Image (tube, rainbow, N blue to C red):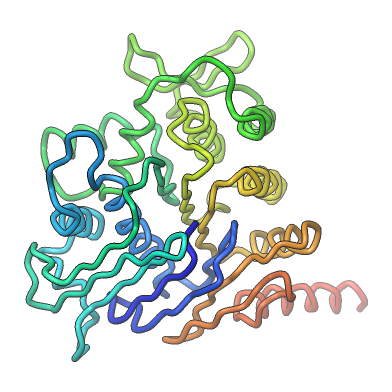
Length: 337
């Protein structure tokens, strides 16, 4: 489990120190505040540790990280990730199971990271980033653009996910909680999403009917991705899942159901990081924290600063929460007139 995240001069994130992390962790803030940037920074370090010394991989951790940062953030050079106007270098430190993985570099850095320190053993489990935009209808386009064209456009969060989805489902007994989660996910979907090897396309199967994934609702495709990664065993009980805007394309009832499934998977061992600007997401996670007695750390952007709270202790003081309450109060006032 990730215990702590420290970042300085990392793009729009001038300084973050987020500690005492839990099974589920939430990033909230308005558009452009750096929520997705923070998730990608975490993901880049995780994937470096997962690729390092895996199989016949011969590259050093420094080489893997530089490549991951380059393709995840798609800057001309990774030195461009240093905050504009910053005098000090970019620095990142991730603590996993109380062991540190840290690095730093300056704005002139091209592709070689000279300052890296790693005390974290190579990871056998996989992390995954679920972007706000759906991936299934673009699956083959993503793979072609990166594997054949080697072109910017779809960053590594999309490319890694597309490769993970390409793994065929595995038969046999799954983890109990994973099997339960898949049943619930399929209940939300009202069917199943399958990959057709012959046509190379994803299909939504409902009863005896099959529908092209392109005409299927966005929310169905998003939930189907999580179901697929549980079914093909890409995820295990030590995985980390980062979700950007879990509320995207889902109605409030589906959001609530999805987060109940997230809680079930978190109880089995998967650690979640979510970035959101939805009151429904914050409120549902608050209720989960209260019902289960869990610590659910939340970091929220207020201007250029980041404040740390815990949903176990109550709803955080944040403009998103304040605006939602204001609209509710306005509705009550109109009703009482």
